[in-house]
Image 1 (cartoon, helix red, strand yellow):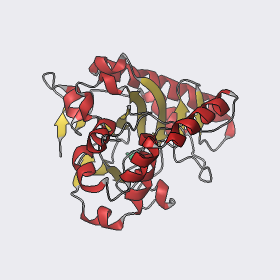
Image 2 (cartoon, helix red, strand yellow; image 1 turned 90 degrees about the horizontal axis):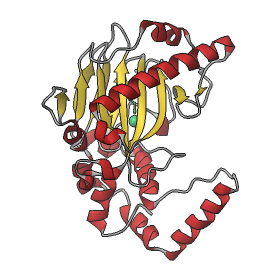
Image 3 (tube, protein in one colour; image 1 turned 120 degrees about the horizontal axis):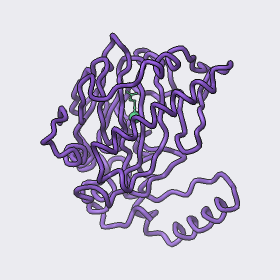
Length: 294
Ligand code: SIN
Ligand code: FE
């Protein structure tokens, strides 16, 4: 497994697209103390359905807070963090930045070790990310994490990236069902209806067979004890103050321990990859000969 400390001569796109973790030691990206003061003072709502305090960058809106009168200050702090993270990411990855879609950012304030979450939401089981409400149609989920805990490392576990994973597991996970869906005349009909519902303002999600498969795969991986037990595993301790970037739909990952991390997500266009053939959707389309992203 590729863990690459960023150096000026490294080709960052190739590292990420091959399923590497692009690591920046403490000091390369810093979150201002004023932002951290506000965030570490904010309490997350333990009963909330939200796993983290999330900031919807485009809507300038925060969810997952316990309430009280700190919401405006937290929103401001998250806005500031998001702006800094996005400009850091755009500086190191200008070819992605030209075509990416800015997604949410989050503040992860709860200790991950021993966290009681329903199986499908557990962070300590290896998984690939897929968003139920935000299909990507073959584009990729890039996340930039910063461990803002001054003392404690964030403990990550990863496994072999998508190209190897898919070769071993995609058929077991039921990929053929999604190939059938892609080839079914009812699929394009259903998508047309969903698009009409959406433009009428109804909250339906219009997703491609690829998105449906990735969502299924997320749950399948977490529920699959054999995979969790037997897959190759790589352990990383991400030290206080460090920052790392990873395509979380390319690299199976889990967090075993740690609290206080900030994270910004962008959706990277498949066509902006140094090699679009390395996108998970391209790998699956090559394996099956089916068009999975329409
Ligand atoms: C995840 O994306 O699954 C969790 C990673 C983290 O919070 O460190
Ligand atoms: Fe994840």
